[in-house]
Amino acid sequence: MRKANKKSQEKEARRAWKKTAVVVGFVCVGVVVAVVAMNSDWLTAHSAVSESTGQETEVSPAPNTVPAILRVTPATDRIAPLDRCQLICEAEDDDGDALTYTWVASQGDVFGDGATIEWGAPGTEGLFRLSVTVDDGGGGTAEYSTTLRVKENYAPEFVSVPAFTEGIRPGESAYIPCSAQDADGDVVTYEWNATHGELFGEGSSVVWLAPAESGSYLVTVFARDTYGGESRRDVLINVTPATSPRLGRFVVKAIDHDMLQFEADVWEIFQSRSCSVKCMVVEGDEPFTYMWTVDQGELTADGATARWDAPEERGPATISVDVTDVNGNTTTGIVLMYVETCTCAF
Image (cartoon, rainbow, N blue to C red; front, side, top):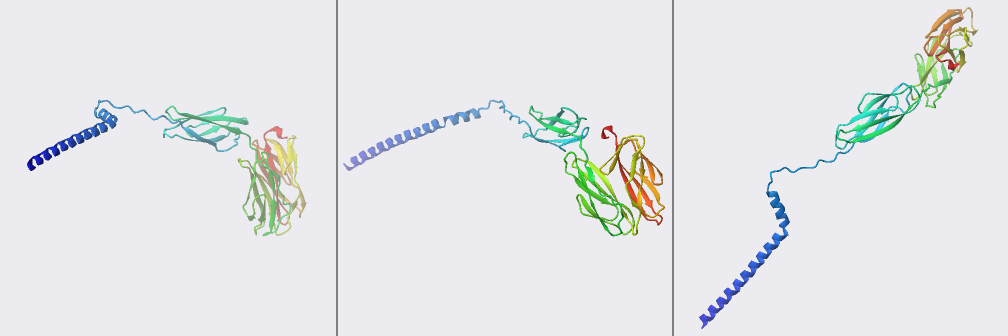
């Protein structure tokens, strides 16, 4: 009886185990089916990738980026008629393409090519447009225009410069002021030079310390504007240990014409015209001797009077005369001339 019960229990255990195995099997199958369902898209894509068609896949090219012009910079903001001005175009391209530059001017001429060129201004004053087109070779372009000003520049003119009619002693000092004006309203700067003695100071006035040796010395001052305009004036100072001849104003007269005028310590004369220059001595021991020189034009001298024939070129000229008294003391006087080539100046 006990054996029969034992066998019956073993059969029931086997039936229970089989049912559990079946349930576990169904559960595993369900899990597999669910996993497959959730990854069906990946399996399909993987299958598609795995199946090689033997054809190359086409890749679309990146779009071209147009170049950008950062700035166009002229070398100056004012250009004289018929003068040249350098311009620089600064541009960049994000693609690193090689850039070409095409320049077009409303008037005037373009010299050179590339990012840096020179523009030749026309002969008239005014505002003129200059344009540049930058091309990257891939269909991308950029354009930039700038306005250039053409205007004649007028050099500064001296208003006052002292004349030292009496000499100073060796080692003494002389205060030399001057002033100049610019018709364009430009800032005026001054530069002083002296081949002998010493200069102290800067700007529109200096102090000159005379050398120990007697003689006639020049102190030169230049007045300049910011656009290259320049005027020059020489200041003559006589250094002597004793009394030397004292000179008065020179008498300057035109010869057979009326195109001679005096303005701001300078005589203006028309080109190729002539004038007489007489040196006046107001104090000193006679007799006097006169030694005349000039740096431009032709000079013919006879004692205290000289004839000067102006050159054809426009510009300054300096007539000098050394006056020596009977004791050997010498004083030098100068006459500043300026040759004009336009009758409108008179």
